[in-house]
Amino acid sequence: MKFENMEVWKKASRLSVLIYSELKNLTDYGFKDQITRSGLSIPSNIAEGLDRESIKDKRKFLIYARGSCAELRTQTYIGMEIGYISK
Image 1 (cartoon, rainbow, N blue to C red):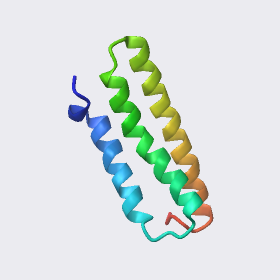
Image 2: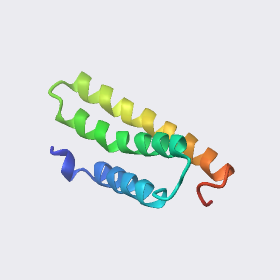
Image 3: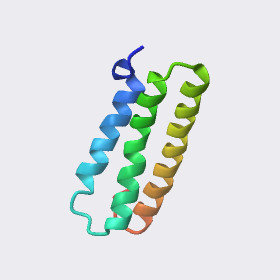
């Protein structure tokens, strides 16, 4: 199956675009870079995993995507606490 047809990849891609759009004026470049990178790595790892030949490789990259989701959630919680992201 092509990753472009997967709903999870579509949603992750839209989330990444939303993060970039919402934080485009943020001047804390360290935070902005970190959160946009973790958001971007989710659909990227899904795509890379689904394009791999072996089941083991597919699984590995999907696990990476799941880890990036946890990273993004953590950064979102912190961003809300410090007022960068609205609750």
